[in-house]
Image (cartoon, rainbow, N blue to C red):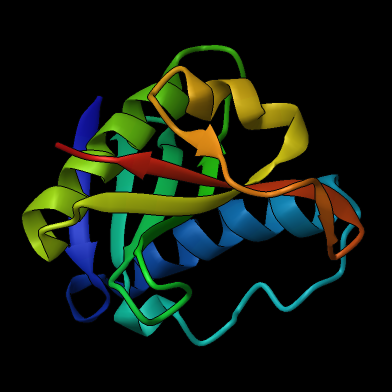
Length: 146
């Protein structure tokens, strides 16, 4: 499994297509949630994914402070195969990228409530009550880095 880290301008058209296809397949089609997946933030993001001979197996994006929140933000966390440890691996890589690229002292994300434990295992803590985002229950979470 290969870890890939690229800014938007470094992505090939094929990589961008495969990233967007995975995100739409899961977040829009599988979850039956029509929402603006293309939100104008990808161009400002560092894209992080795990890839093998089958393609992209896990993905997330990292955004600097001031784009989605006052903190460095991780979003669009996805694993093609659930419960295989890929979400954890890409999340750990994303946290490291937040430190390296943006010198993060904290990392923010909005987690789908069902996945909250994944983030808590990495040290994130809830900083909000549950709320609905595009009809799906979420919580705001923060990881304070040393």
